[in-house]
Image (tube, rainbow, N blue to C red; front, side):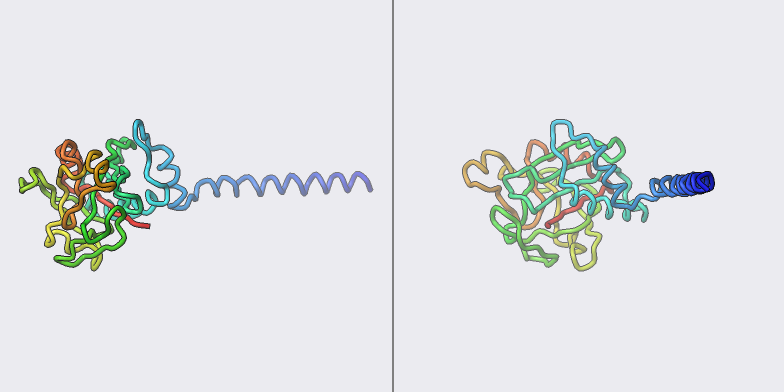
Length: 219
């Protein structure tokens, strides 16, 4: 009787192992979108910069992927602006998605009616002088009163789709600087544009123009 027991025991454990193996392989294959995005996030080279928060990146990548699938992204750059941070922090990240690399991280201002040091209130309305949140596709450049500027097309109905009409553009300004922060304990603000440091504006605009994805977020 001992023999039978050991034999049946052996049989049951071996059949258990056989069942477990394919299950594990299958589990590894079916990663959720979030898990895949976390893996991608961990592959991004920050170099001299930091990475945006992972939760923010997951949201950003979700929209980026959707817009890419719709054929709207022609320039594989994902720019993330996280207005959850103080305007004294470098809260704009320009990420080269093809090479998985942060190419720039910098200061960026919010609209004057969105808040002082922190942006707290957002709008899609003309004359609100507030920033808009959500996903944008970058458009063409032009020379305006702030020099080279970049038009934006809001992709979310009711949230930011008036961006072009409101003249919400990326441009440089001298009130987006460490020296302004030193004197005022915050950045300068404008009507509603994501404004960047003057010395970086050309570089940023050249990198992100012509249908890349910009995500402006607030937690």
